[in-house]
Length: 210
Image 1 (spheres, one colour):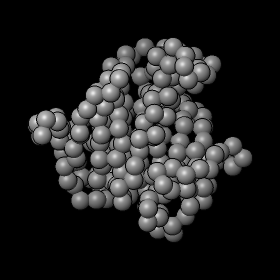
Image 2 (cartoon, rainbow, N blue to C red):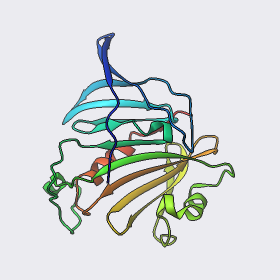
Image 3 (tube, rainbow, N blue to C red):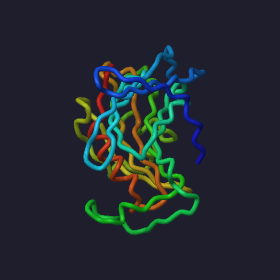
Image 4 (cartoon, rainbow, N blue to C red):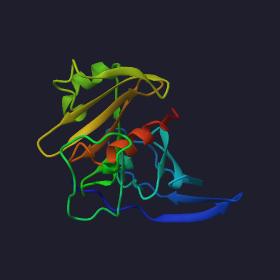
């Protein structure tokens, strides 16, 4: 599980708020967009600093420290959110942790959250896209084990899956015009890892901007 290096940061104050500008890296991508600056609006929330990130890919979300946002793949359609403080040694449990459990503090080096945009020229709904794109969605075999609901104002599906080397929680949602599909994922080694609950909190603040 490799994560690219962070792009350079530039910080400045505006009207009493600290903002950080990240220069995205434009590359050939399935969802190419014109590169332009992205901005963090920084505030305070119980438990850490809350940052609102608006992506050129058509969405925004909030994330708290110690998570950092890697935009080096934004030109290719992907944002990666991870905890840079994770040590090399994995500490986890195969047993699911309840939401209010202290076991949520455990983590593994590969734990991360990703948001990827894909083109959807046929304007498939979330389930149709997940079924027809199993390599990107990991939806294969989940046809009877998923949840349909309204997410960010759009009909979406969510489900969990496990592969050969890791597991994930996914949310699949179309853009407002239906021409794109967003796949939000929490990737982890152990079902009780903290990133799963951090992901739930983060997607609760996810908004589409296009």
